[in-house]
Image 1: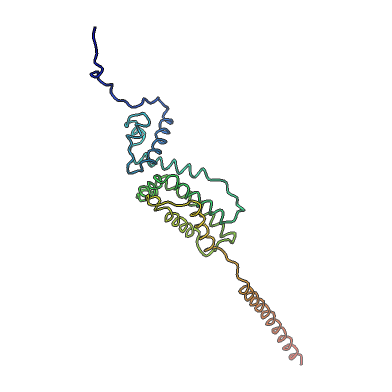
Image 2 (image 1 turned 135 degrees about the vertical axis):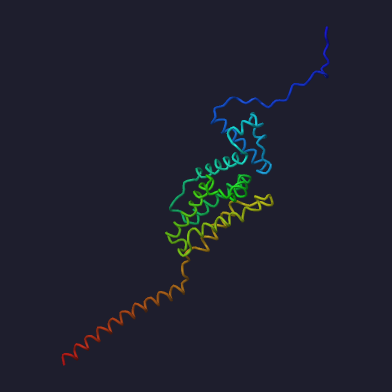
Amino acid sequence: MLKYNNMERPLPPLSRPSAKRLPKDHRIASILQTARVVLRERGSEQFLTSEVAQRCGVSEGTIYKYFSTKRELLQRVAEDWFEEFLTEDPPSNPDEPIRERLFRVIWRNLWGIKKEPALTRFVLLELRPDPDFRKMKSYEQNRRFAAMVTDVVAEGIRRGELRGDVPPKVIRDMIFGAIEHQTWAYLRGEGDFSVDDSASAIADVITNGLGQRPRSGSVATLVDVASQLQESIGKLSAGVAELRQELASTQNLK
């Protein structure tokens, strides 16, 4: 009777989990979802398509069947994230004060950065400096969000809640500049920030610094008095002119 030594029996080769055969759209969606998780955990610098493939239970070649490069895969992940961000826009009340509407749109931007710092870094550091960025879908998506901010600012100017002598695009750039400065340390892994506090502070700076301020009582009084005097002088000048005409007519009759 044959006896086998279990210690000498060869081990079976390691194999990745078998993947179910999925339709193309489902397979791409699975790859994108997994890639987003890996990017969130590793960052774009340590992102490996081989890890995405392993987690999906497919070969790395399957990844490249749908995405020609790692960058293309990450770019698609960023586009899908941005589209979700844009479509999740909550309904706004057009009758709200401009300060509250600004707070909401700034808060959403800060919240997106807080939620997906690795994706944000990838867009800021790798996509935006690309010479072809303006040809990318991400650029058009960024313009759509920027337009939301510009529209709120323009509405504030139209309603007289913001000054009209500063172009809306300049105010928009001030807002996005403040957002980047508030979040840059966090994106570098060197600090943190409060979404609520940062959004509130930026909205306050814009509305208080560029808002239409009511004149103080003393100044308003002086302006009103000057206006009344100017009106009275105009009436007096018109009355004097009429008297001169009447006087001239009387002298002519003589």
